[in-house]
Image (tube, rainbow, N blue to C red; front, side, top):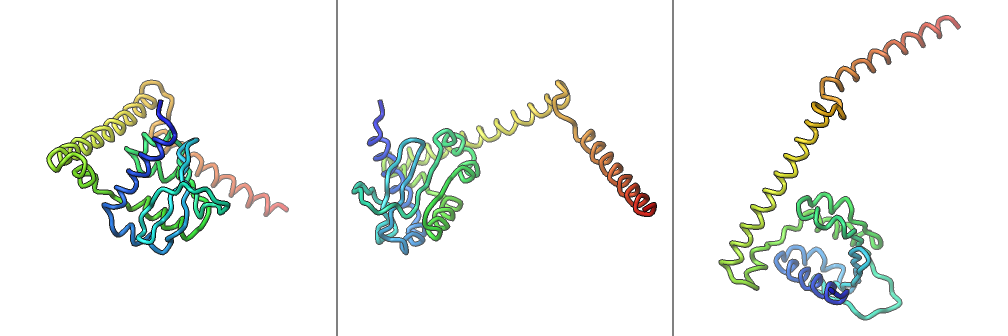
Length: 195
């Protein structure tokens, strides 16, 4: 069974290694040195302290001071976030210091870690390159598969099962609504003239 401390340690080490691949990200966090971030992954939480260099280091000393910023990420969306970063951004909840929240939000949107560089420290350059190629091709295949399955379901729901209206049916409905709106406006004008 995976313990909370093991999960915390792995998440912190991975985050530190990822941040080290992007020096510009460290520069953005440097003004917030000394502030504490609390990260909540489902029911698990851990704290990180921003170092004077802008890095994130584990923070285990519990004090009466609340964290400057709390990041809450639901565990159930993490697997989908690997395929669609926008889904993660839509479910990321930030509370606390607004200036720090803006920087964290910016990093969440624009941070593109060099995974091959990170893996090369652990496995060497050749294996890291092959793992990187495998990851990119697998991610692209999954995205394409999800897109094709959504399209097939939409076509099935529209054409075969008649669960959803077709584009032509939606256009006719919109035209009917426009005509009805015009008729109601003419009726209101006639009523206004009668009174």
